[in-house]
Length: 354
Ligand code: PEP
Ligand code: MN
Image (cartoon, rainbow, N blue to C red; front, side, top):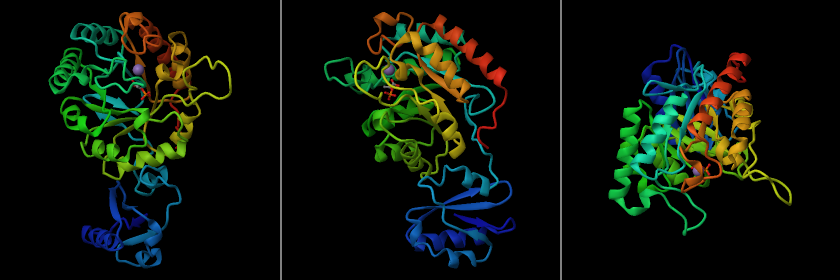
């Protein structure tokens, strides 16, 4: 990390960037209110920091020890940037003062189903609509999402999502399962979701980041927090800092019945907030895998300081084609949102580790 003096000129910043590139690294220029900080993308051990420290306009040049530098609080602090990033999407804020609620069916099944659910979640108080069109499934024999029918089917379903979002005034989110779907999905949605199974797919992360849209990025169920943040860094290194991190449960421990689909790692919320300025939300649905626990896990997530929730909702959960055991009804969502809002209010503004 190279911290420029507050009166450093653009020419001096440009000269440092050129010097960084000479050593085979890329520069991430972060212009804060008080000064400019240059983050190094690549192997920092190749950089002679003593040499950089005496270049014109440079205040300080030092190594950042964490494997995720550009998303670290240390980096934001050095640039005098806010310690938490507020991501704005069509009038909604993620990471702002109020928790954000993202809701919708696991899979878009039909236009009617989507519009019924969109209306229900809007009335329940949700801010954003999520519906899966390309579903990651463990079995090839199960419903893969309408996108599996080919490009025309995918566009039709994406159109519904867009239309439902406009009708009920909610930004829309859907998952991109592979690079082949990136262009078409980015054409329609406000936020691109990268699912847990793809957390490690760095090529997918890079191409999603290059779409310059916010990304809802889920932690893999076997990934440590450091690993999760290190992979998030791939997107920020593409100059896209609008990354919403999502904790959705890790693999349960021990033998015998585990009772939940995954184990919600509630501590990940405050830990991530201490490490980075990116907002973190909770997915209680995939963590629990059963609808009777969604309310409790949602409350726990908000109490832990999460910036919001992503919850699977279906007007008729038992009939849902995917994840029928864990989807809740719009009425249940309404109760959950009311409870989460009171918890948030009761706990007051959190410093979020800052
Ligand atoms: C989903 O959001 O529908 C999903 C499949 O979640 P995850 O990637 O967390 O398993
Ligand atoms: Mn699901």
